[in-house]
Length: 153
Ligand code: ZN
Image 1 (cartoon, rainbow, N blue to C red):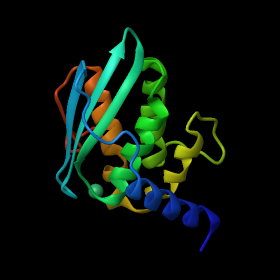
Image 2 (cartoon, rainbow, N blue to C red):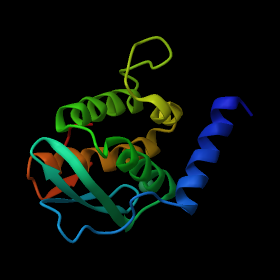
Image 3 (cartoon, helix red, strand yellow):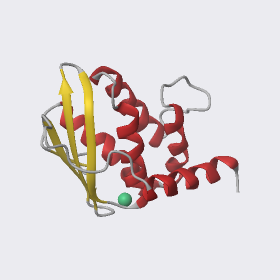
């Protein structure tokens, strides 16, 4: 087993055992639901934006392990960031998962999220990993629901 693959499995397991920012925000001012019919993932995202800053973010839902780990890491990464910085991460994460961004050779801001780079070799799992990010994008744009079947992927 390669180091990358082992790290990937450790991260998925860790975030499934102890998901970060799991729950619903009572004082959220942005909410969105995400669906991935291919796998059956469903995620609810709630955020509190202060001007352009993501002050609080939480997620819950019925998801597979990859989707949950991705959501957990996403919330931990974007909390305290500006919407513009989070949009950059959304784009880079999508590009990494779909193989448009090669994180080994191209510059990016993904940090530890790079652990999901291997998902591009598992085409049926790409949508699971990307769903939370797609849902975050919908929340910023005040669309109440997102689906991986919108043709953007
Ligand atoms: Zn899934």
